[in-house]
Length: 113
Image: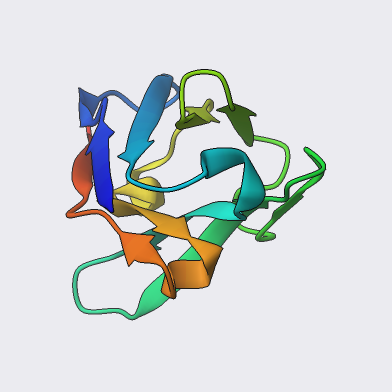
């Protein structure tokens, strides 16, 4: 299984970014996909999950600002991030089935003026 995140980078507070995660090596639509982040000096936080049905759940810290989506035809999951804050600075990881079936190497998001 290969899991490759992209789309991170520097952004100013209040800005937006869209992360992508391309998956290969498994039947993508059959799996729960999610995004997790690690803030320097802190633990991992699961911030968004999208189920096979397309329903999604979010951590309170990102609810209303981030949107997770999936394109089963492209084996890709996305994380649209808006109204970014400096506290959103982190390494963002893509997960398959909460990490039990795969996890990417991450993409760095830095929110700073």
